[in-house]
Length: 412
Image 1 (cartoon, rainbow, N blue to C red):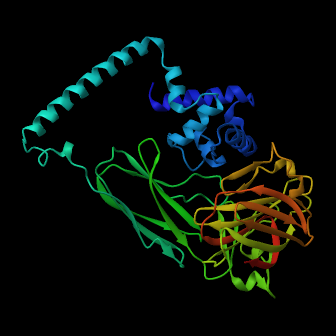
Image 2: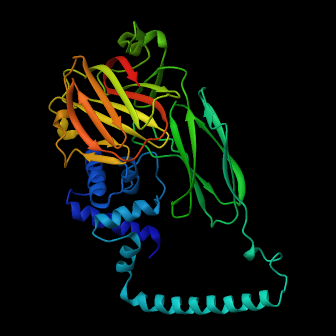
Image 3: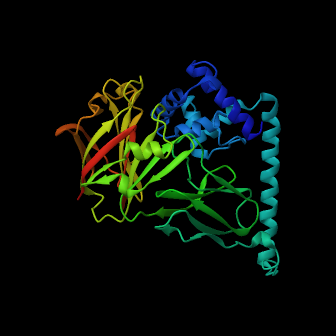
């Protein structure tokens, strides 16, 4: 079987194991829960958007998707195999195994013979090395130009020289849609050298990855779109609004003015997100810092839905992402991400991460070397070992499903 056939069979087995019905009827909730289950079983995280792509449910990524090997290892481990390689070996039809064994023996014999021939040639100083490309190790280069900017939109240039790598290769621009329902943009590489350009429209950190033909990471570049200060973005469907500072900052309080949003076409009868983001070079020590913020959520009243507040400290080597759910909704909390530590809302009691609507409250995140502490309304709600550092602190992001106010932000 070819790789896509193995992948299709694996996904079908996962669907059967879960017994949630046909995957084409799954909602984002099922994909989020599957993401958590896979992470718990394999120790490898697969995002909800990647799972939607794998099962053919992404509206922005319709072509066949062959994920990186780590992702396939996670899927295999979820099905109780040790690796993707072991999964494929178990699925090879018996009639093909003897043929594969004979092919391997023949291949080994050929390699052994070629090795002897090369040794003889080199022994007699026959100078063919400089004439035969097989013996040459080509230059490898994956570099970027204008990877850092304060302006939007902003276009970067990536150059590559990958003559020694088997094609095709891919560039993952890490440019996921704001509502996290779409997949990343990909560029396919079929030549040994060249360049590509890509335009970013949002202030954020992007990890640009060069992927081999199996979507394993070969090299990574980091692009950062810095902001000069706090910015406010509002997302609703295809509407992506950068709010004028006159309409979201007043007396040191950040709040997206409802009249302004209505004038810009935001429909308050439908879900929307308000995001405050500051991508700057912060001087705080990523291994020893305290982040504090006061916030007041305005969840949509009169609608039976679960609003949330997400607060993230973004680092060059990861991030600490805390999600707080509207009272009564913590069962919908997918996970708390403290860099490489993931706390599943399905397996961990995260009821303390509930917040009231239209009430001011304070959240503090304390990082002390290998430990992380979170307090809400001056009550400690989580203490955990967190040995991995997010490295340099690059920014802060606060998101409301609905609207919300923010003040008294401190990072020191």
